[in-house]
Amino acid sequence: MDAALKALAEPRRRAILRLVWSHELPATDIADRFRDVSRPAISQHLSVLKGANLVTERRDGTRRLYRANRDTVAELRSFLDDYWTSGLERLRDAAEAAEARQRQRRARHARGRGTRRKGT
Amino acid sequence: MDAALKALAEPRRRAILRLVWSHELPATDIADRFRDVSRPAISQHLSVLKGANLVTERRDGTRRLYRANRDTVAELRSFLDDYWTSGLERLRDAAEAAEARQRQRRARHARGRGTRRKGT
DNA sequence: AGCAAGATTAAGTTGACACTTATGTAAGCA
DNA sequence: TGCTTACATAAGTGTCAACTTAATCTTGCT
Image (cartoon, rainbow over all chains, first blue to last red; front, side, top):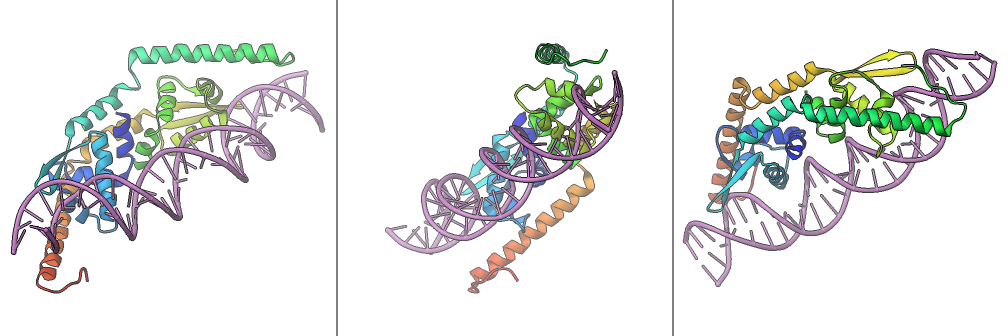
């Protein structure tokens, strides 16, 4: 999921993914769509997308046909839905944050003798 | 939207955003949560998040309180829903892709006829 | 005024990454 | 077998971004 998010941060890769969203396409056809970039660049982008499981590759003779893997995008979407509000993780984080604050407060207190801290 | 995606590609920023998801937090408290990274690093991340409209900043005395801007995340989610299937853009892209393919085919054809040159 | 706390900005380093050209590899065909 | 097409990988380069430490700015307090 981390890889998918990172892969989609690149506009060019989003464009590629959209190109192969509704129908599979050979690498050449994809590259032809981007005249301002070399063919290997597209190949590398496709490799990243494949590594993030955002596209699948199928071989047919000398050609390689790419197609979007919609499931991964769906997963990414539900990740964005859940990540921030996921109960357990949020509780754990809150606890850790509180602990870190206390640790910090104690450290300051012990070290600096003249230091004062504000009330809540 | 582009900025938001790019901002969230960084795991640390996702963690920060989750920290301030349900309640605002002063920068120090946020930084204390990440012991392995310096305070300025967190400040810079916060700046990026603010630039992407993913958090809002409120000042209170010397402190700066941050809070997640959930609307932007919601927009990002619907962007992920629509981008690939958006009718007009998809049609436009398909047309351009077809055109590029034809251009390419013509070029190949000409070359095969004996003319050894590409592009205009 | 002068000092301390909270936080950002400045400046510099490093690693990742999007690109380039050049080279390699696999499949189809004369 | 050798050529051509379709594509990937290798190697190198420039840019950007995440981090560091040091310096600055702002506010509150006495």
